[in-house]
Length: 391
View: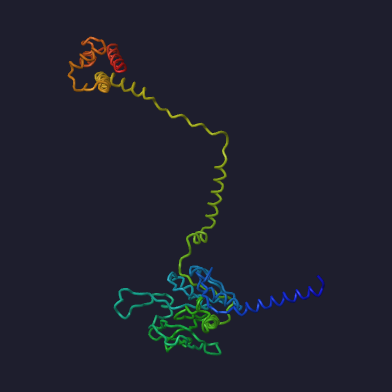
């Protein structure tokens, strides 16, 4: 094949390939579709996972805590604490410690919480607040506000523009007895307080009617991420942020490890040592002693001796006679219905014995008396056994 032929064949193949690709392109249709991606991994159990990622990408070290129980050790005052849970498991002592931490210069961000009073289910006063922190701040849950427009602009101090908040409803923040301080910054939605910032000594507490707008699914909407940014910068630029979303008590093994890890380690070492010692032995196994059990013959002999010593020979003779009668009844039908005389006659004929001897063996009660000698008793029992075995 010369060079010209090769070039022609190559050109034909390229043209055919081009036509095939063009035909395929004409048949294909690009369709755009939206697929909902479900949450996976940590995002399933941590609603503030996206908020943590956002803050980290904005240069603020943010970390998630398992539960409010981890507040037994509070961070430095230059760290912002954001608690989105209802704080149901925080004791009054821990609330007082949090309040003292705020007074020392910390910044605490929390949500309003309420409880339902079933005794007031038919009245208008169906909610009340039993939260110690809200009692300290003299705040209570107000009326429920339903919004006609889901995106509401709010103006926050430090923001150069109004930020859009996308919510459908919220429970307003009420200041008890209309108490307020000159340091309060109230951010309202439809004339109802949605965010309340209160300076306390060197620190600040920010209370929100609702914090659901910063969870994993909602932080991407409207200006929620920027609102979170403004919230954590309410006092100053934080060096770190702690995000807490859970009220549950930690698992038992976590509590045990946190409070008694030395004891657990000691038990584990002792268990390993016990396994090591149990897997080794010195010398051969000690043979198991045979159990001391008497044979059946020994039990029968002991019973016979007991009856003999207590002058109850008649019981032994009667039992031998009963055994002989049962044996004859198995081989002679109607034996039990015969009279004593008939039994003596038939048995004497069969055994070729006199009727007097058979009568003595089977029915004579004198031989069982206590006057019978041991030899006579033995001979009688022997004869009865010989007859029983011969039939």
